[in-house]
Image (cartoon, one colour):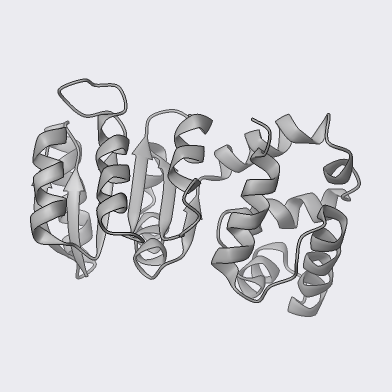
Length: 217
């Protein structure tokens, strides 16, 4: 798996390079600024880009904007964005084109090597990897004033959160220590209550749920 990495802090960038290489990833470029990232994505066409939201020269959302530009040129380019804090606006921008192969993680997740590399691989394969804190905030902000979401049971909300992170029914069943059949039933109830079409496509269903939770914002 060929990776372009963009992170302006040298120690973190070096650590991520070593971590990804230890998991058999090829780092084709490790850059520290927006202009460098633009060039690397255009010229190297990686399998996945791992990008810090804030990069020089603006130190605002330069990394995210570079990733969005690259996805316009190459639709579906897998991008995993890293952020110091939960920024729901950034998550919405990343998901806006609905083509999948995106992820949004807090930098704290990097310290769990297996979880981080799993997210990179999931995004590279066309899936979605959303940070649990982002999903929790979306759910908490919508639950209070959205009647369909308010009809979900506590267990269904828990399943929805894990679905939105990009997890399969089997993975959710394993985490909640229940049968996969039980999760399938919860999933069906969730789609029915939210008025969403049931789909076996994990990426499409996650994007649909996130779009529903975020609509009107």
